[in-house]
Length: 102
Image (cartoon, rainbow, N blue to C red; front, side, top):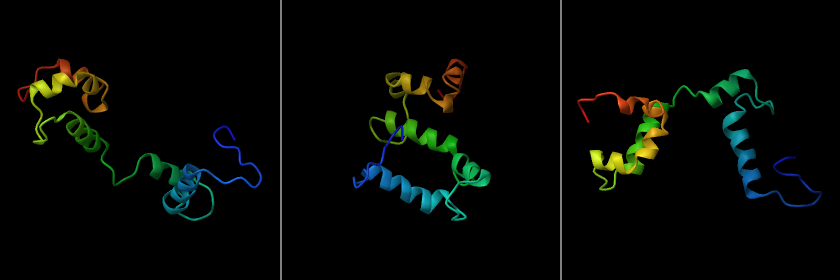
């Protein structure tokens, strides 16, 4: 009710419909209408999702100005705030260490 109070006879917003579909199609794996511990674990930590790879792809996608799939020192420095706030760089800590590849 904090996000959406369903008034009698009123239509549901599109985002509510989408969330219901996501729940029934992907979250409620055993189709019992609620999420148990295993379903919550699968949702938060899916086995087939590589968080580090996804974050690295995100950083390259957002920072690679010339779209050559390689980051130059200038591209990284121009987007330093994205790297400092990234889990992939341990929130900036890894950027302060010496790296041969940089």
